[in-house]
Image (cartoon, rainbow, N blue to C red; front, side, top):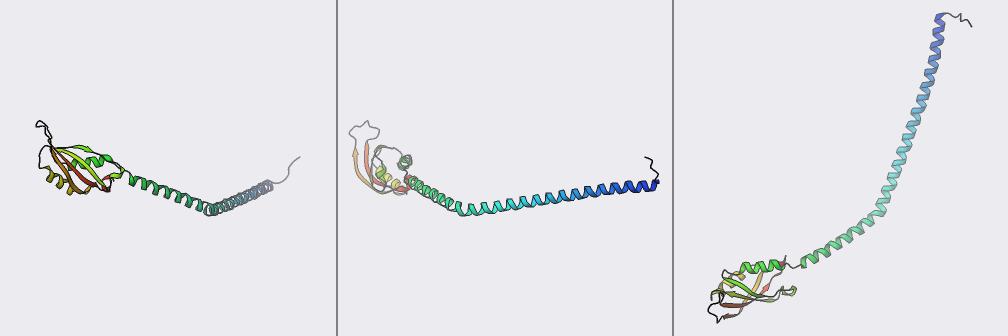
Length: 180
């Protein structure tokens, strides 16, 4: 077939075809953009609805569970505190006693148990000098660990070669503050 159309008309027809094709592409692009916008809107609404549902579910059901769990933990901590408050550190008691003993004396006998707090405890101390009673009374009187100091007896050893010839039996009360 021979094309006898002028060149100007041929260009116009070719441009018209390209314009129709571009118009189709623009329509397809607009439909695709609309579809994507609709898909994003549906996804947003779905996620927002799930969030609201989950938030109300967590608020309604978990709040009571969390509160009950918190109450259980609080009770357990209170019980642990009671146990730890009643714990006795015997090494602190013995350290406090030995720190209050004057130089030149040593512990002869001491018996401590859980019932020793707030009750009278007896301590036997051996000393090198006969005038330790005033030093003992002063030492035990100025500390907060002990109270109610009292000298029960004082005996002298019959052995002249003894390094600690004097024995003092004293009684005092161990205050609870020493065990903390």
